[in-house]
Image (tube, rainbow, N blue to C red):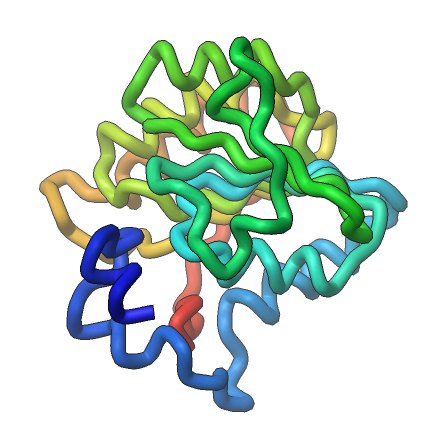
Length: 207
């Protein structure tokens, strides 16, 4: 809602807010591609991590498309009002972790900062999944992407995985996201010999 957006913008630029509640068109978006890639995975149970979930628009599309997945959200913002009732907050030791109730998948929401060592350590202590698919869409800077890789991704990958980086072209800082992704690819090649990197254009999550 406009009232909620005025309090917390969830990383949505003002010029894009007017589109946020509009229906998507029939043009392919990254949401379609992510669901397709997940469906092409032969595993019955997928561990999915989304870093930078904003208003959970992508996250809930994945939730509505599958059953029996572990879906993990990591975001600096609190859970948006639309989906708040789907989660229960953890105990005192896990106050930043929220878990779903009575849904087709197991949903986890961690309220944390990708640049905070305390938050990322807390996240890793509470959840120990090996992820099959990671969607990175948080702070679009080289420093942030490299930090999240080091602290959230690098040691939490399954033997076969996809990491999907969004908005490689955004230049909030120079160097931007793409050089970080290239560095990460070179680092991962030392650990995983059969590794491929693709870049492409596709409509984004707003549509």
